[in-house]
Image (cartoon, rainbow, N blue to C red; front, side):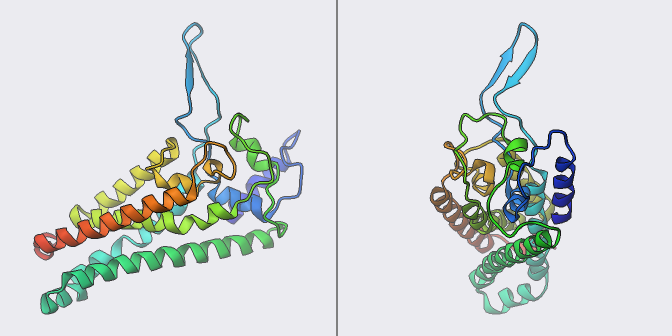
Length: 262
């Protein structure tokens, strides 16, 4: 992804006039990774006279942002099921303590999300520096040029990307918890599709319940006046995670989960 960002910046530098009017920094690279885009549910005016749809913003599909989470969800998809069909099944049968096994899987996906984003951000940052990024979190002119076409809600720079980076892990944990419980109730493929649909909904709509929005720099309260507030989303993620843990435990307790997944 850092290489793709470098190619993107290089293409922008070749434009005439170029939208990049300052040195490309590590902050610019990180914006490429988790910048996202302006929300897709902003007011749209349909001009019936000439059949033109005029929007107050330029929507750019946040493919890199979604891919970052899809990789995490794919990594954490298989192991809980494999453990349920293997060693974990023997533990549940012998101990008759399903809640221990379920709690261990909740802890596992949490730790996996933490390690994933720590490794990903560190590797991305080091690669960006090797590719010529200046060691600074300052945001230049490139990102706003391509992600904002309306200044109505845009705050004046400087912008701080660190709060957005700090929300990657909580959002990742929340998504993994949703996928974990849905994979137990339905199937691995269905749970992955549900997680993907949730991410797509978050890409096109900005809503407080669509908590992945808070990990988009373009929808952070640090950047726009109508942005997502981190502490509010943290409460929602914690609430959803607890509901997922309780739902999974009750489902495992009241259903023949072992025979169901054979």
